[in-house]
Length: 155
Image (cartoon, rainbow, N blue to C red):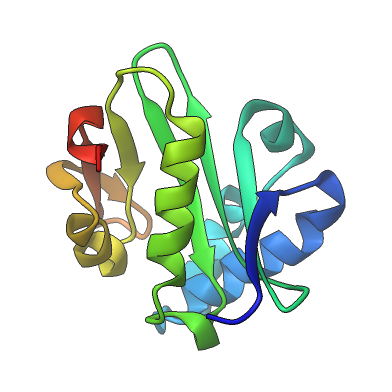
């Protein structure tokens, strides 16, 4: 891979990161009306930058993806993992997720993610297992709830 770096995102990156999350979600071909239903929940806020560890993936000085992990008392939650559509399938998601887990996950707690159904296979390939489903919008749509034990994350 060319000049790739993963660095802590700053609040000044918020517009780029929010654009990436939206176009990345659109990559799966969801109808516009579904995208509108999810838009508010997909947008990073200033508060997210205070509560979450957000890292951006930069390729040749351009942000092409980001990952955010939030720690709670019981778990680490991967709240966002998005890659620009033209770079999906090139190992950048794996690189970014792996980096963030190693950097952020310091305590022996499970790592969880509420995945998009289209990303379930990706997370499974990274060691996550599906343990439940959560109803989403529109009604009748379900998201896989996945987790990885920290011991599964060692090299």
